[in-house]
Image (tube, rainbow, N blue to C red; front, side, top):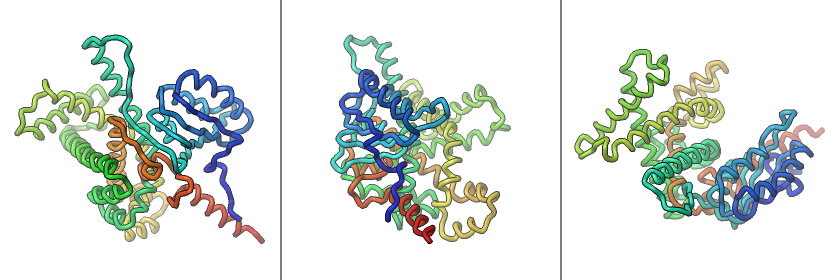
Length: 375
């Protein structure tokens, strides 16, 4: 007899429906039901989604209300299910579920932040709006990357030959991504190819900045107010050398490039703890067969150092690829099928498909353990 795990299954008895545009009015309508479900039990709450999007801030507010701890510190797990359309803010909300499910007929649509206006804009106003939209896109992209990263790890390990070459070294990422593109329509396959191009650029910037800073003494002990100007100098030095044959000036497009690179490296530094945690959990998946055998022979105290030496560089380039991918999703319209959303790490499961899911793996383990315990 199969065993069902409530943490990975939708539960209509503890469900909410988010339909139509995501507005403050929609959030107000859902709030009493959310509070009722949270008060009744700490079991997972299922959120069914059929929405063209709306306010990202309101969507995050709904998610926070479901996920926030109660007075006893108890949190409810969130299971998101797209039953029709999940676009823009609704697509982000879908992906941010603890376990995300797509019905086979669903549509998932991503695009960048947008803002409507009822009056004419001045130059100053337009500049401020552009900066705010860029900041919103970056924030949403990084949040999506954190959510998708663990899923994409499990996707790429399914790409048999390509993952073996990637385990040999981070330079195998391009072939790994090319194998992944076979799962997409030609239009959406271009998204992945563009992401790998951007990933290479990001890696080059970081490597150049690292090499520049290595020439300075005691950088690790510098306060941010000393480190950040030096980092800007490192980036300007890199960009100047990169464009030495071009008519490249900071006063033209150069300053925007430098600012983008600075934010990228700053963001990476803020993600270091996340990557350390991911390395501890998933690092062993990126070891070659011989490395895996050697890893198993090590003591628990030696595991972290071994993974840092043999898997961290692969996890890092994969992370940069996922960040590049999520940034691109915030630039223009990308309509994904449920299967494509699965391979991009937006959802964990597509109902009725033969795609591997966490639920199947967990329930298979539980069924085996249950059968073993029987007298």
